[in-house]
Image (cartoon, rainbow, N blue to C red):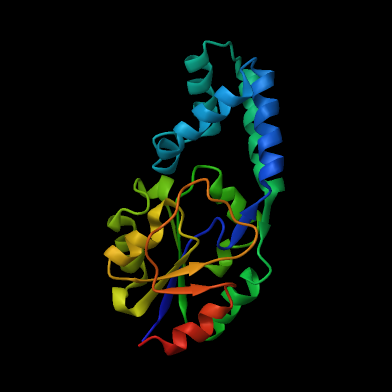
Length: 226
């Protein structure tokens, strides 16, 4: 019997306005006199370190970028760009239409929820801004956990915090970072959610047990899984 849902964040509960973020990163690159394409590639190359908490702030990220490209970055400018980075992230983030009502109904039906997200230091204020924090019983953010999907450890953390067995949970995600494969390897049934808009910037998964097209569909699915 399903008692809880492990749920991905980006492209599952929340989507980002990629054009706004791309424009902002290009603006940031130009302000540092760095070619935007090179800036984007280097920013992306550090995703793993951001996700696992090795890079723990935008300020640290900017210091690494400045050092890598040999540009000057004063404390005032670094603080200004860091503040704008969070503002642009929050501005670009939107809940999918079914997110809030589904999380509320999950709770009213007695299901527990655990966010399991590959995400970096700015995710916590984003969750607060989107009013998601009170709707989730457990929050496992990779940068705090020090481990990222698809490592089985991060799924185990969620199960431990929920106090449940793998057979009692479903994992829901778009499939990025091989997250559905990781859930499957951990013995948790994996549900791929396909909805618009979504990005494929962080790869995909090769496995899923079920496919849904809105988060709300998982409620009826959970009733069928035994």
